[in-house]
Picture 1 (cartoon, rainbow, N blue to C red):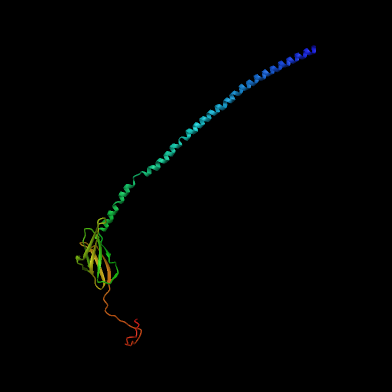
Picture 2 (cartoon, rainbow, N blue to C red):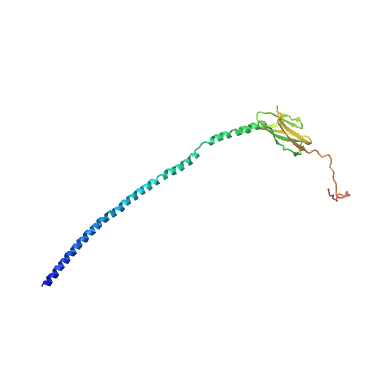
Length: 220
């Protein structure tokens, strides 16, 4: 009986020890959990700077837009520069210079220089400035102004085209001169007129040709 009572006491003591160990382990576990709580808070604290970094990156990315706008603005400015108009105005006096140069010229359009003619009279076409008079000479002889049969005025260029009909030529070489009245400005061309035949000579290959009305002759 004493042995049984001793074993019960021992078992009760062991049970109490086990319960004490369980309490101690529970307390140590709770303290460990309490000590780990700040560790859980640290990722939260670290996550907040990430958000700030993202906001800073977003803030850094915002200035990119004005850079694009600045690059666009200079491209649009040169396209709207009306600086070409003064250059056009500078080039506008060029036609006036041409007309002023042509105001002191006379041109023989027809006949061409060094041409060969078969008819003893030809048509002469002249171009002179508006408001001027011209005289036509052939070999130094003045041609009657009644030979002018047509005049055309070009108001844009300030020139007049005159056509002289039936201007007589001499056999051989002729010099046609157009000269502005009251000045020394002139132009001359030389043309040649074929003369009339003075002699025709015919020769044959045969030395004698019978006059029988049937024999033919070969003309060289």
